Structures are given as structure tokens and as C-alpha cells.
Image (cartoon, rainbow, N blue to C red; front, side, top):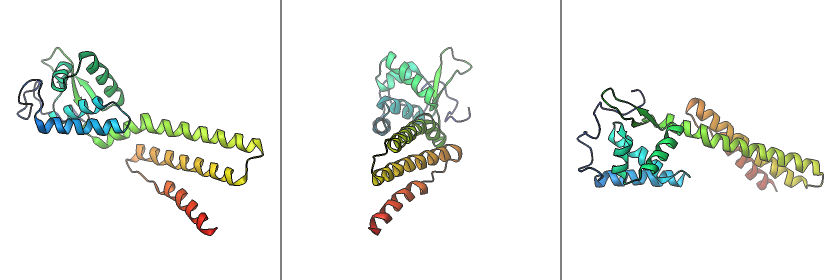
Length: 196
């Protein structure tokens, strides 16, 4: 199972599993909640992060029912979370030979996971911002009455969005994040202010 942390166990039989069904060990609860908080800060659902973190820490695929019990979530809630996480490519559904139910395993290649989420969400968002700024610039130029200084600032905003989009696309292709173009836009503005 490439891309998964799976030791070949069946269910929650790992020696590192929670001490009793439906109860996370204290260290595990802290780690799972920490990831959930980070994910929520980034604009996702907190429980999406908690589900991924549980699967990642356990190192073996779990059933939806096991996830419900371990994280004290509803069946419907877990179903929606798993669907979202599958769509983002951060978990995958697997069926073990001896099983009649689906299990879910965490993507363990963290760079690939971040790259996929950026491709699905941030890159499209930045592309839309860039298109909006291009339209704003077109309308401002057509108006003919917009002061040159404002046009220049609008141009700088559009250039910044273009560099951010380029940096994200480069990261998606190479896993390298080059923000030199973004920084150059800020340096250029600072230099011009210093000249005045």
C-alpha cells in the first residue's frame, strides 16, 4: 500500500492503540486535537484534521465505525468527513482481503498531501484573484480618469497575485516554494518609497 503507513494489522490491534475502545490515550488526544486546531486555522473543518491525525498516528486503516468511537463523532459526521478527506486525497479507502467493510488509511507523504491540497484549493483561489485584478485594471484604464499612482498600485497588486500563483504552481510541480518574485514586488515598492 504505497503512500500509507500500514503495518498489516487488522482493526485496532496495534500495541500503540488506545487503552480502551472509544478512548484515546492522553498523548494521542493532544496530538489529534493539535492537528485539528491547525487544520481549522487553515480554514478547513477541525474534525477533518482530527480524523487524518488519528489514521496517521495509528498507522493502519480503520473502519468508519472505529473512527466514530475513537473520536466520539456521529456516523453521519464521519461519513461526510471521510468523503471530504478522500476528495482532498489525504486518505484512501482500502479493503483488506479478510474484510467485508471499507477501511481508511492516511496519506503519509506529507509533501504530496500539501501539494495536492494547494492544487485543489489555493491555486484556483489565487487564479481567480488574479483574474479579478486583471479585470479591475482593465476597467480602471478604460475609465481614463484614474490617477496614475492608483493605476500603478493596482498593477503592483496584479503582479503580486501573478507571482504568488507562479510560486504555487512551481511548488505543485517540484515541491519547491520559490517566493523570490513575491518578495521582489515588496522590495520594489520599498525602494520607490525611499527614492521620494
